[in-house]
Length: 297
Image (tube, rainbow, N blue to C red; front, side):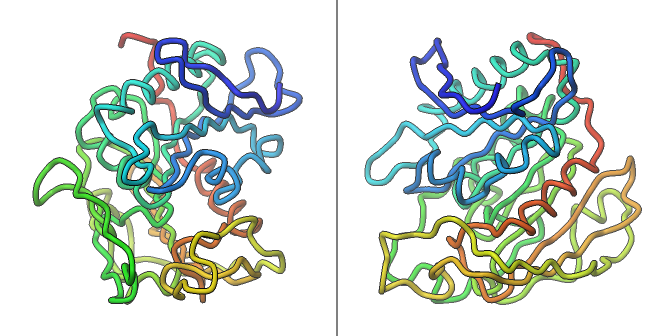
């Protein structure tokens, strides 16, 4: 057990698969499918959202693939990637046992978050199995306004299929499924965080409550080195220590976890610091699960 490069034999594509070093057969686990953003790869994503650093403490299985489409930039495309993502889920369910997947989360940064949102809208395979979605600057249900500097010098990603209801930067669509939702982003990549949440309203949750801030004295592990010396605070600068504000919407029906986490003085691409990473994982672990179904269901 530990970290391996796994193979999706149906597509001959490899991906990272990490699990606890001391995992016992038949042990219950939390499964996270961790999707990188546009222009990135799985190796970068493992450091941007380093859930693997907490795999032993929280009994995590983390699968981190790379998108197939490379031009004009690497990004997730339904026709090229959705079968591969389903195959990864099937492989994990078979390897660990669907009955031992305590909960299954989609986590995605930027276009990976938009892709997670699209799958939860359009793909019955994922809608039936996913227990939660962690949007890592990948759109919020109840949109956020992006600052004018966000796309300075860069092209916005192409719109996802689905017209006006399609996921797009800052804005996620309302999926027709029952899941917990956690949104996190940097302070500088939005104009302001809304005080309400349509997803919280759906589950009759109470008004948001601010939790104690998360203080990190250690920097994240990665940033966008391709824009060294010419990036903006909105896009992201060098990794550095920081503070995160945590807001939860309590009392949601069925115990769903609904939360917003804002990383102060951060942008879109600074890797997550260890304490805020662990807080996000704690929120995920505290959410209800149990939607994992036998293959073919």
